Image (cartoon, rainbow, N blue to C red; front, side, top):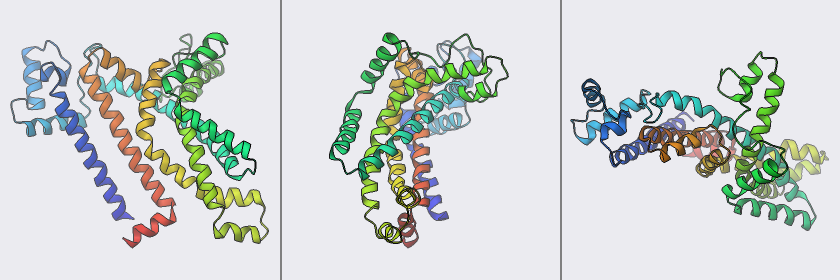
Length: 342
């Protein structure tokens, strides 16, 4: 197991190194001076120019510049934002928790609703129920996320006025940032309006989370259905039925845990699509996360923000993909058997 873990750690570093090399060479193609693109200082003083040249080794060859670039970025130096003139690292740390909160909420929705529907589609004897569930998954998978987000905003936000369509919380509430995850910070707050603020934050997150959850929701249903159909034909399930065990106990204790293993793997495979969907959703609903921050940086040609946004999203996708693969391997007996055999 330790050898397998070491190989995955090496894979993470190697993939991250390649990604940062691509980002470094892309930075050199920006239509501005390289020191400006790296630091965000448009009109540097003589001292700032000398400091930038030393930090990024701009007088050296490409290899030495890349090593200096790698050293600066890994140390947390992303320069300053061209537009706000604030530290890019501080801005990134402020917007990253909001994206994490939205993604977790959407993932919970997808699992809580997708798994039961997948189980129902696999166990139901009614052809109409099976076809209806599969039709819902096919429709949800085919709907463009930008159209779905705008449609939900129009229906539930504008016409029915049930849910807010932008932002993370009403500006009337002042919540002190502790973890920078809004729902947790509200619960940690000691303000008298804490519960009303929590309710308002929940209402704000519903529409973007539901929009973002559609893709994993449809994937979870299809993978769960296929996995359950396969698991229910296994010998140990038939043996449990022959012993007279309750159907509900067989389903919850024996069938479902094994059926969820492919679902975990599917989550790892769609992280890239999930991240791209998340960027679109954040822009539609003005959610203050990495996606909307990155898109604003692209519109405003904020080169340091573009680099930090792409770097953070890419590293998170690589890291989470490898972590999901490790968890999948550790809980799947077949994978463990193949790993030890190799």
